[in-house]
Length: 396
Image (cartoon, rainbow, N blue to C red; front, top):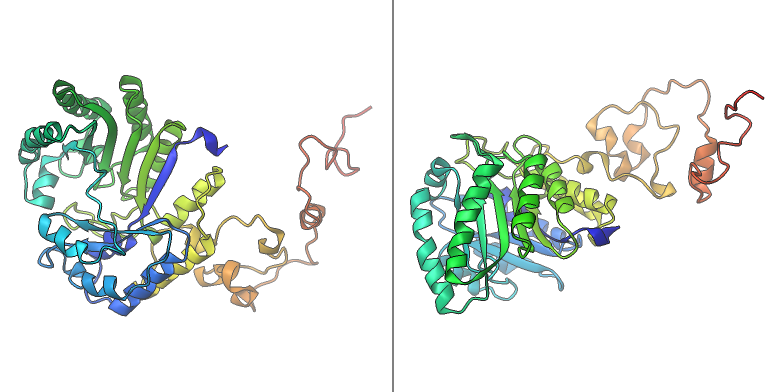
């Protein structure tokens, strides 16, 4: 089943994208404990924070302490955001355990489709972003780069300029592709970004389909999706199902779905795909994530305790779908109402003790009996329950 999907590379961004818009005074020890807990979940890629100016991102001022105190786990790639040479030099002081990544290592042309957001977020205009294209191409030619990338940010629309159609997006990508064609460098990668939460599954699907149709040599994709309007997980699903087994898709999210940008107008409500919900979705698609959802949910609860509020994910509220009979809910569990009581999926039946019990007799089910014997509740190609006495049959 998973063989029809692309290779999905998932990056957990809670320590950076999530924390960058929270209280700068959150305990360093708590952050280190969270990072260590994330390392035990089975996640393969974790961003630990940003090496940036504390003037603009005060939440990252003590990133050095976090990197010095956390316990790296073998098999996990730890990265950090660094936007300039000074940041890169600071990050290199901690490599290892950090892996220093500058994008994909593939020269890429990209810019924001929303000029207003570019000005607000980076103090640069879209025109200034595009001015960097010629030097990027020249450097790639000088280094005999074998391949290159194209991309847009604020791809789907803007809180300041409105909707961007798929035709608009494709026109931007075509202009970039043409520049690489003129330079004689093959384009093998494409990215879309969504800082303001305008993503929609239909648009993601159409953009990726059209890229594959127009440039089949593009096999590396990236989608950075925010969840302001609840479309990020569905859009990620569209990205996965739009691509094939010869493609690679890079996506990211944050535990609990927290995070945001102070320049987009939605602040903390911007959010991202909740990592626990994405892992749950991928498990259901037959994609092996290697992630322990139980441990991931514990990380979400840890963040909520740190922040003093509930986050945006769903699986951390209800638990994953119980497949093993030992994890299935008690048929005779009483009336369950509050979010605290719902945690019985992990904390046990004491969470709903003393609640209303309205049934006249204990609930029994022949289907549950079968499940507990290791049998399926229904036999699509067998006799159960179709040939049982209780199942209606045609007359005669």
